[in-house]
Image (cartoon, rainbow, N blue to C red; front, top):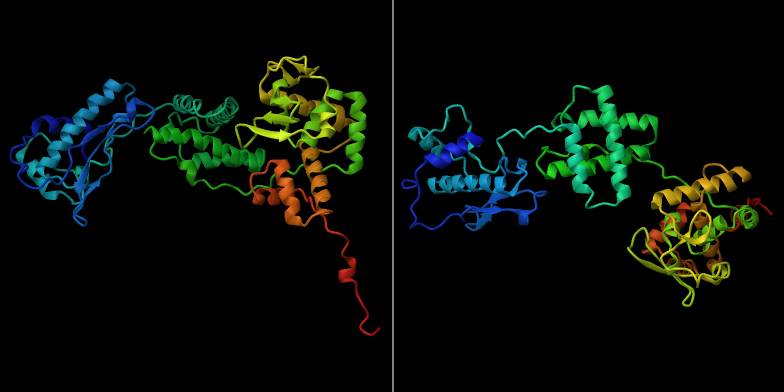
Length: 441
């Protein structure tokens, strides 16, 4: 494997004339430089094709990166790649073959004494599809900041904050437990596994898995940009975790809550009804503006979890509870802490958290509901009611087909899994099927 020093010496010290007979059939294409259209966040390299001895066809070989991608300007990368390209051309014309061990070529270079110190190099050192230079070290904070800078163009602001939160916790833990680790290159699978075990002991399998996913996403950026060799988190297994269960409300619980909120907190009640009757998620309700509600066509437009935009029918049971919105500006948010239709300068997460805490303070504490009851539980409750109502008139498949159009599930499989998880269907009493009968009657 050639070092950068050897490559530079070789590039300017070896002569062409004894190497290659141009009258022969060309066994390779001239190396070319790939610049990723100027994108410095991607890998730049030199590439070429060589005739495969088995198929006798030109075949693209592994690109040569060298230490190109540690440079942060286009000019520097072009300069170093140009040197690599010239060197590869000379190697190829001297007879270099990526499908052979190249011992003879290596011996000829050594005998000519063209400046290459070759005595102690192994035969693999002549290969050009690997980087012989040790990657430059980068501090932990610098490396993670680099990964975040790339990621912020690809993920939502909320996801970026999640990344930042988990990275900060990791760095604090490293200072306390592994102060000797100062660079990203010193971080390895064993250390991260210890950190994930720490998260597991103090929280839950689900949170541990979330840490693994988010940190792996950022570290993958470092691998893609040749800052580290491998994303070792990929080799750390995901733990099986039991998803959080939101209990459905009984008919009496639901009626008592609605009656209580009619007087105590009408805004929270209407918020809950959008979850209950339109089957929106709490965050989706927070996104709604006045312009999203079309009273004439009885529809609501919203940004869903799995699609940019979705449209749903507003059932009359909800439509009748809406106040007059005709005089309000379309850009106003439908829900704010104090009025229906107003401005609310806050993130979606903060808005959802507001109503979650408000629900706990106003409803859960009053009715002494445990942690398994939530705003999301209303969605489960009314989907269950609707499904059981359809079953009274239709076969199970027909009932699910009708329900799927209302809930917004994109596949029957997803809906069936959801219905199983919330125990939406409870069979009739089957005692008579297993009733014991005396043998002789």
